Length: 428
Ligand SMILES: [Zn+2]
Image 1 (cartoon, rainbow, N blue to C red):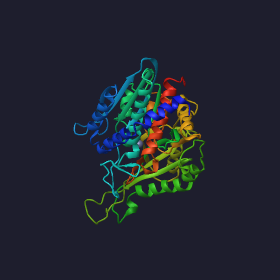
Image 2: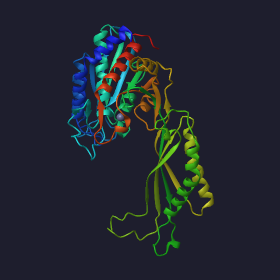
Image 3: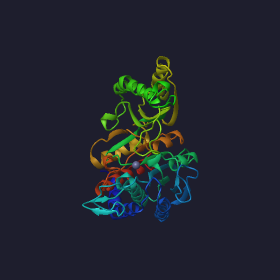
Image 4: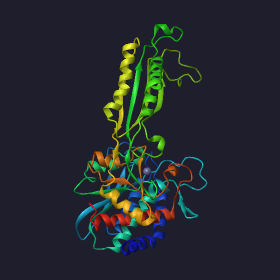
């Protein structure tokens, strides 16, 4: 390892205790989303920690975003520390929200238990460990090179687990994720310390509703069953669409490998009248409505028009062929696939640092699902952005979630060296 990198590695290692303490403190804020518990105290805590390190900090509420109320304000923190000369800005963005703890824990999920070289707790790997690692990386870098050019930003944002609308999307709309303010973004999601996540597949969520005509259940021939029409839709999906999606392979390095193709999940189906009014008794009518929610994940090789077109073609054909078939199609969410080029500055800087720290090339991966990078690309128009951070993705959202202390230290070292390369090393 070159002497300069050696210095950074030592500066990170010397802060191991602080790194663990930060992670523990962050886990102790039960920032559970929904509903968005303890966002403000967590953001204030981060602002305090970053102000003490010379950052200018700002709390920004995602006003009007889904879930934003005075009881559950969507409080984000964004912090910036200017260097001594002009230069680019590197931004570390982490979400502070976590999913609910759920059952099956052997430790208190919000105590931040440190045991056997690991920190346990909800959000330990996804992604409070990554957030703490980025703070320590910046710390080590600033202490080693106090005269650095450019600027470092660190943000703690909310609601990633529910779409990021009150978090990164809100800040991106305000210009916080655009040039000239920011040039390079690293999102320390738990993709593992030697992997670089270049982006994610696309998403199209939609609701399909078939119509019918209500009638007495004893004389269904007088009505028209929306559920039977939906069954025809499902049969067409089974016979045509699912096999077709299965055949579409991508060159995107998606992990796990099963997601290296197009997929569709049927999230829910609701047909006919509710049984709630007559507990234990079925509805006595022919169903006049049936709704289906689909979650279609698509590839960079596919366009959104194509993706929607496949479903519309089936629905239109049924309309022609099936007497009295009618439908409505409603878009619920659209996210385009995104994939940063491997030779963009951030992945190049991270790759060089990973080679330095681990003595091997990084793996490049694509996430099957989306994360906040979508807003940075679409709203911020900033494309030099990847996810890189400590922790094992499979542990996220599960009981006894943990992050390894050595993994955090190594990951923080990679981040510190990348900062160095991007700010001082002229990686452009
Ligand atoms: Zn996450």
